[in-house]
Length: 392
Image (cartoon, rainbow, N blue to C red):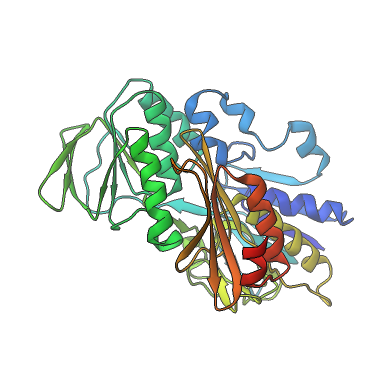
């Protein structure tokens, strides 16, 4: 059996490692559009951006460890199409790679700020090159405007404030993160920003950027403006599926998968940020852009490739974390609906909140309460009731 993995980041590499761990000794080809060896992404907005890590420290594996996996590693060459009938992957250099099983692990791409001019000083943060460029910008002490109040933008704002820079976050929602956490916990996250000197402008959208060659100003929809030397665009990420548009593989906010992470074409799977699979316990399709999901899903995909006659469903308890201003924010499960606070310090530097659906615990949120959150993660895995959670 010949296995091709398209995507050479955490999800793709973890799939390869899981395949080898399960005893597969056949041919594996890994295709990656970046020329760099596989690297970890969470440190980009943390240690790499702060300069506490040199970029090479973020590499996921040493050269020796990658060599031991015995793969044909094709870096700096993008996949441009899949012929699902012939089971071939077309590459940008004109070559074709045959497969018996294909794993799509192309991740997601940072969304640009639409309708604005191309100006220097406008950055996104998704790749190692992005992080290096953004650190260089921060080293010059700019006035910073972050567009988007999600975790990546929040971590950039936190690093800028650590450097004592002037920082404003512009968020279109009335409360940052309210779609994912609800207004109550979104407000808690907003207060974390304001306590550390970051201004937060909520309910505002960007109407334009001003500048000649370099950005000088951000114009908002209420006709106000913010002076800026650096604009960081953190308005989310889109699954990297454009190269699959003509493949016949079903798409829809990523690669559309069944409960076993199988795509609509025979022998095709997807993993990581690009994968939108059916979660049997939740009864709906999910796509998660989380480090833990990439690792856990890779293990299930590898097993199902090697045992297609007895596949197992992928039913994780989602987990995500973010480090901001010296605090760790963690979320497990599904943080939808109203939050019920079960632990809160007077200064809100420590918060634990739970989420419910009917009489069932479905999620938990914590700031600086890792051990307590771990307990709720176990309860979620057990399908605990709401009363069991409150009694814990």
